[in-house]
Image (tube, rainbow, N blue to C red; front, side):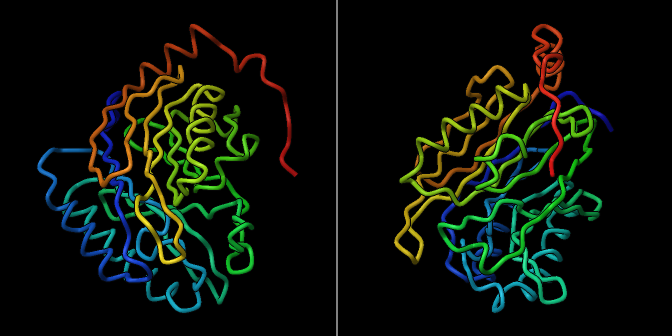
Length: 261
């Protein structure tokens, strides 16, 4: 059923390092504790392990167990759920964003830009394809963390045309100013909503994450801006805001044509 309103939940949380059962148990308690009806629940990047470079140890079992669990949560709570995990396909590893519908059906997007400063490209293979999710009349584009730095990859086009960007991340506090500037830019230049969920807390490598999860409207205005603590926040989006603003200020009509090689 189509709806102009989309209620989303951003679960900004600390993560148990490389402990899949503990992370699943934690998020399950939060999800099943939700009393308000919502449409979408967002979990951070690698929400079952933290930003680990050991997919050979965790990817296969993590993928099977987590996907089964996500399907159960989605069907039990009648909600779409998304977040990224390690995934293994024939011995090849991906940082994979899973989207699970309330029916239990799912789609996925593989992170296209691997964070070389953390040697992610040595352990995972990059994705090469965009994904467009159609949900309740909304066209949704998923991305993962470092993708945020690449505006051409995230550019809304006539073919890749969406109303909402979803970004899941493990973005460090030391570059929080970049996160804040780039999330605003991606929403403004694509004239869409952007919902970004980040983790908080110190990981085992002593990298701190300040959260700063946020929702931005097509005009670049902050609808929600988290701080550096654990949060469970419900935010309502209105698709007519996107449609009306694009009609009033049709920047896309003057956009440059390009092809991705």
